[in-house]
Amino acid sequence: MFGHLTYKQPVTKIGADRDFNRFVRGIDEKCFGRRYRERGKHITFARGVEYQIRGVLHNHVLLGLTGDLSPFDIIRLWERIGSLVEIDGVLQPRTGFARVYEYDPNLGGSHYVSKYAVKGGTVEVGCSKKTELALQLRPFTNGA
Image (cartoon, rainbow, N blue to C red):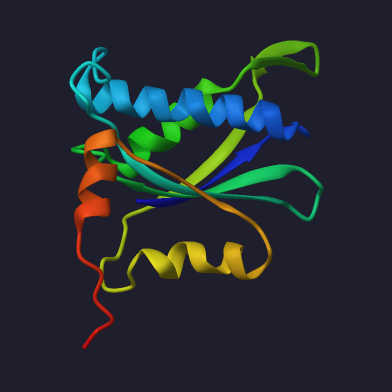
């Protein structure tokens, strides 16, 4: 799946990282159960962070190994996972709305994340140790 994850109010990079880590943990638990770490299970993700025109950080994410979760499940999790902040006198999660779409394998992962690297941003990648090892052992081919 590919998505945009926003905030209602300005958030620091540290706060955005905290909310994103909580979000990933929530997906891991929904996909693999509360003991996902002991089982060596973890979703895969690529994340680019940038500022919106209004000056607030937002995330662009590519998510893999999410099992039977639908885009709606991912959206609901993001909208509820944020740290609580006071907005208009009411405590509510600081995470804003999310747009999540099905991944198109014909486009490939680079289609979704390359623009952030080209713009000088960074792309954070996460996966289980087992997946990381499999990627390291995979032979590199140059298309020949």
